[in-house]
Picture 1 (cartoon, one colour):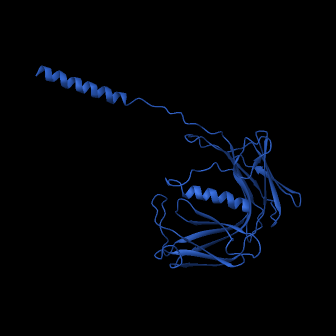
Picture 2: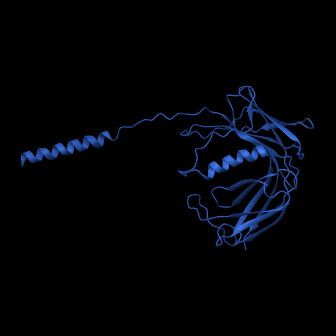
Picture 3: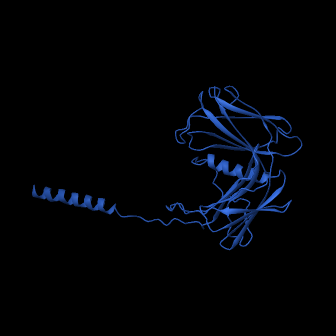
Length: 284
């Protein structure tokens, strides 16, 4: 009995030591990318408005495990110039990472240059203010989508003929975690009336449910440049394929804002200039 007793004690001590050793913290060095300027500069002119109120947001990127949420840039200078008319728009620093103007003058097909000066380095980008067609009609159906059991919302518009056009649509229903984003060209429908539909499936991960009667969806419809189309196409593709083990590896997506002082210290984000139409639809 005595021999057996000590045997049990030895086993318990060994087990205790193994459990204790499992409490050791293993530290893994995770490579951190360079902190970069993030430029969110969308000059969006809603149809039916003057378009004079515009906001540009500046922040910095953060390491993946960084818990500091204060990344606003409050010591920059932001200027937009219409390079066709030489009209200059100085954006006022609001000391919260946003820079605003109430005097912007949107002119379709004019070129605008953004200049941001931050930490003694200058970032520039140029975009043309793109027009967007009028939305002819918005309605609902259940037979024209991918799933004949789901409600979908349809928008119709006339594509201008003879020129390459690129479009960006944002759908959002109140309560959804994220909006749905889509970009597309008029490559196969030049000069025709285009129908674009949107339907939702139940998705618990994104807190998203299929459309039901009484639901209201907000729709923003933009005309965009080819450069922004290419940028958003990659961004949207990477966003919707995240978590898919069979998707291709993501790329380090760069926008059109160039650091003319130090090209190696590039920024993230994009400078866009677009006309857009906003509408909403309530399902019956």
